[in-house]
Amino acid sequence: MRLRPTGLTRGAVTSLKDRLHGFTGRAPSVGAWLPSFKGRLHDPRTATAVGRWLGVAIAVCFLTGVISHFLQKPPDWLQPLLPPRPVWGYRLTQGLHVASGTAAIPLLMAKLWTVYPRLFVWPPTRSLRHALERLSVAVLVAAAVFQLFSGLLNTFQWYPWPFSFVPVHFAVAWVLVGALLLHIAVKVPEIKAHWTRRSPGTLELPAEDGPDRRSFLAGVAAAVGAVTVVTVGQSITPLKRFDLLAPRHPDHGPQGLPVNRTAAAAGLAAGVSAGQWRLSVAGPRPYELGLDQLRAMPQHTVTLPIACVEGWSKSAEWTGVRIQDLLDRAGAPPGALLRVVSLEKRGAYRIMEMGRGYARDPLTLLALRLNGEILSLDHGFPARVIAPNRPGVLQTKWVTRLEVL
Ligand SMILES: Nc1nc2c(c(=O)[nH]1)N[C@H]1C(S)=C(S)[C@@H](COP(=O)(O)O)O[C@H]1N2
Ligand SMILES: [Mo]
Image (cartoon, rainbow, N blue to C red):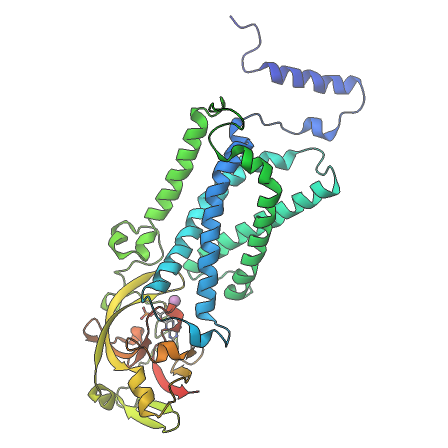
């Protein structure tokens, strides 16, 4: 028989005595009244285990995000150097970007749960160094929460904030990575001590590595696996059957392809008249073509994906005229940059520029047909750009003008 009252451990009794003692003696410090956490899942070993997975997810997300940013908004010197191969390059990097960001959400929650008792550490700062370290952790947590939250909402095309998403998401990414590197540097000793399964200096597994830590980590892994499986189908088409929670499904959309911006949203609800539409090409030998003339030019068929920056991708078969042929006809010099203008009234993607690597690629088309049918209005009727290894936002729909720069 245990004589101690049920539910009170020896430690709890001692701390209760300490507190009572505090009343009779000096005034108790605030710290004495803060909760104390004894659970081994709140220890540095768990924090290290979850932290390294989270670190990998953030590293992948950051690198693929930087790639996406430079493919989308290349500085002038980079524009002609961007590679149109592999054709699925952007599909892969952006699929990874959204998948790693999504996986980081349960990882971040697990990590914050593991370390939250530190919010109750008393005194809150012990030295200038300690204060700076805590400040850097606050920046790290805020930046991580902001990035994952804003990125997730962006995949739903939901922008409930007054700033524009892309520049802010890009800027905060650097804040996050800076704070993360600082955090890792500060924690090197703890990470080293807890990285491997063995306790430092011994050959034995630490006694506290009991079943509860393993269950917790297995639970976190299951959560990561679950959110991944129910969303990656939006870019990995063979897994589309499991795509239950992603905002886009590869099969939902006219002509077997999702639509991001509809003709109505682009101010073209009334449609585009095939008889009146003209493609004008500005260059050393400018010219204009009607739709019938464009259809009479040599047609090429390519299989290329739309890889949206918001994470969904779907491959399709496109038929149309090579941009290269249109440029040659205008007498464009081989290194020329191309500007493409859409009929769309307003919108960030009305005007698009393309370096010579893409413009001269035999797979880059002014497409007139999609999966064997004439382009539907939502997919850019009468003509749209399709190019290999490019973000979806640059696959301009409802094209009306090409300018050789
Ligand atoms: N003119 C114009 N073209 C555009 C857009 C746009 O907003 N305006 N959206 C782009 C985006 S974000 C994507 S992902 C692709 C999607 O093409 P789809 O609707 O044919 O699938 O079109 C691109 N072309
Ligand atoms: Mo997109």
